[in-house]
Amino acid sequence: MKKFRSLLASAAVAVGALFGASQAQAAPVDLALSLVIDVSGSVSTAEYNLQMDGYANAFRDAAIQTNMLGGTYGATAVNVVFFASNFYTTALDSFAVLTSAAEINAFADTLDSFARPGSGGTAIYTGTNRAIDLMLAAVGAGGLLEGTDNLVIDVSGDGTSSTTADQAARDRAAANNMTINGLPIGGTSINNYYLNNVITADGFIEPAADFADFQAAVRRKIFVETGGDVPEPSTLALVGLALAGLARVSRRKA
Image (tube, rainbow, N blue to C red; front, side, top):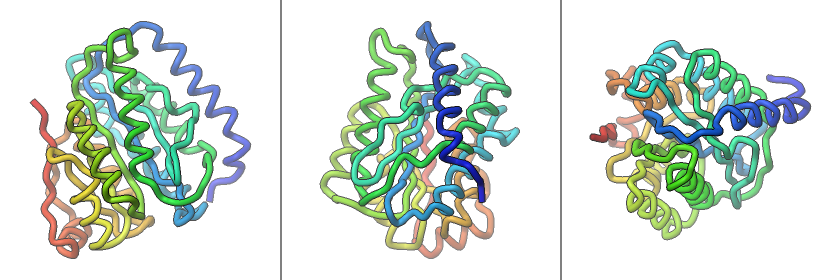
C-alpha cells in the first residue's frame, strides 16, 4: 500500500504545471488519449491505489513507450478525468505532451502518487462528457493539440449508471470522431454493459476480472491504444472473454 498519497498531491500539481508549461505551442501528436477513471464509493482506497499503480506501470512499460514515441510526430498526449457522481476538476485535466521516455516516466510517477479527488455514486457519462469537452478544446482551433485526429477516450470502472445518458455520451464522442474503449472491472454483467452502452462502434473492451487483475488488463489495453497490434489473448483474458461471451474488437483508425 502506498503511503502519504494525500501529502503528495501538491507535488503532483507541480508536475502537472511543469507539463503545462512545456506545451505553450500547439502541435499535432500521434495520439490524444484521455483516461477516464472511476473513483466512486464502490472503489476502496486499496482498489484506487491498484488502479493508479496499474496505469503508472503501463506507462513505464518499454513496449508502450516505444509505441508512444514511434509515430510520425514522436509524441503522445495524455490527460486524466476522474468521475463518481460527477467529474472532478484536477491538475491532470490538462493534456501532457510526452515526447521522451523521461517525460513518460515522470507522468507515470505523477499518476502513481496522485491523491484521490473524491468519491460518491457512479455516473460514467459525466466522466465521458468531461473527457469529450477537454478533447474538443485541445484539438480545436487554437487548442494545444490542434490538428490531431487520433482521439481515444479510455473509460475504466466497476459500475453502471444511466443507460440513456451513457449512450448519449458515447454517441456524442462518435459524432466528434472520438473512439471510446472500455476497461470494465468485474464479470459478465459489467462487461456487457460497457459493450452495449459505453464504448463506440470502433472501440473495444479489455475486461479485468477484479482489481487485482487490473494492472495486466490496463497494460494490454494501452499497448493496443498506443499503436501495438492486438496481442494473442492470455489464458486469463480468454477466461474473461469466455465468461462474457465476447470477442475483442480492435479500433484501427485510418
